[in-house]
Image (cartoon, rainbow, N blue to C red; front, side):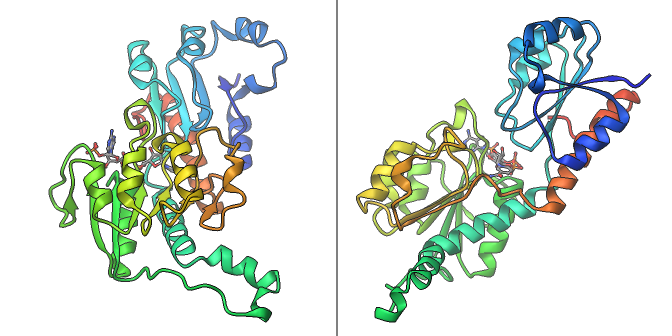
Length: 311
Ligand code: NAP
């Protein structure tokens, strides 16, 4: 008999294949009658798999009194109340490290695409505008300054790449870090005042909601750029849209949005913004590695071994 596994949302296809091979997978998202579905499994299910964007509510956790593990596909667990899970005796695992490089790569892609107007220029050529004249000039990236909110695994990987561009790097997080030479600001506002491009790489959730406030956006100013690869919630989105539309900030590169996949339509007609559909970890290699960690954490749990990446 294969153990039972509750799957809350679809995952990377190869991961689903592995899960189906090892477990009797109960697909919550396919159940028409969720209540009956839960009732039928409540006293059997000890393990769940979900994704960062989907999470798992405390209400749903409570419906499975034997639940012991939530294995999350993604490093951001803002969709899961981890302290509440802990109190219920449920371990939460995530997929750190394996996605760091790709998220940092995409952050730099957004910095470059936004400041050098790469996407705008692509449209410029395709529309035949080049035949009528040259494209407007862009902003220099190399040798300018980058501020990073959240100098964790991803933030440090972004900094390393920016160093190769000769950028001056500064950061904000709750704690100043030993072992880095980058300038620390204990307030995001001060950081924004002193950099050309601000990159957000901290976790989402209540604590960082609107950490990039309208004041931070104003401090960045009409010559400043903002890049977000964290969560949509970290930015005051209406304030950003307004600032972009009215030229009070030079540009923004956004991979994440408050109500994704819904993106504020006002952004669609703006040339100073580059939009991505939350794909910073979206490469074949990284998604496969993330899925493997989901699988390995579940296997460790069922084998009674220590979990690999418990939050
Ligand atoms: P990490 O290693 O835990 O780093 C998080 C950093 O944020 C730490 O330096 C932490 O420093 C700082 N931080 C935490 N709370 C903060 C707060 N309230 N105010 C200011 N700084 C705060 O995490 P990671 O692996 O780098 O991942 C970071 C985030 O990236 C994830 O949580 C996720 O939301 C996002 N992400 C996005 C994608 C995507 O596809 N766009 C993919 C993967 C990850 P202190 O503890 O000193 O504050």
